[in-house]
Image (cartoon, rainbow, N blue to C red; front, side, top):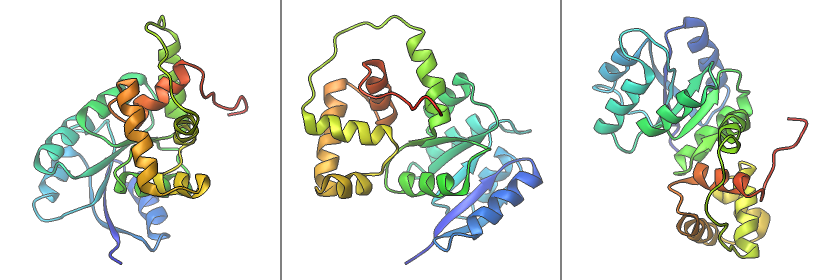
Length: 217
């Protein structure tokens, strides 16, 4: 089985080195290149074909927002995960709008980083619970408008497991159903809640208190 090819984009050598060491401990992953800023990264794309990119945000010459937009235009199938010291909601939303499939803080542990890569490679989004809590605070600062739609018990089970960060395969195994059935439930939930992606579904669940984060987190 081919390894997942990763490019690390960060202007700090220490960060790049640390991430590279973590990724090299996983035999399913291969770091094929490193870039010091967005401009350097776009030049690398001329000669490299990564599957996943770990993208810093604040960098000289070209920041992560601009680099992500430009890269997605050239490679729509590219999976970009934002990796930042900042959990500011504007950073998160800007990277999502630019085309990032995930958002992690640089304090991320190895297991969570591996899972994020696995999930975006499977076509899903991944946002750490720290990031989700930031978005939740924004959500609850606004007046809730509209009515809660009706979802069936199985859809609710799938929704709660999505909130817990489980992948399609993990949900299928936990509920003893096929991955295709999980995707079908997810598609129905997206349609019913008028959501564009998994993170919107999670925010819906939080908004209507179908799911809450543990108090000790």
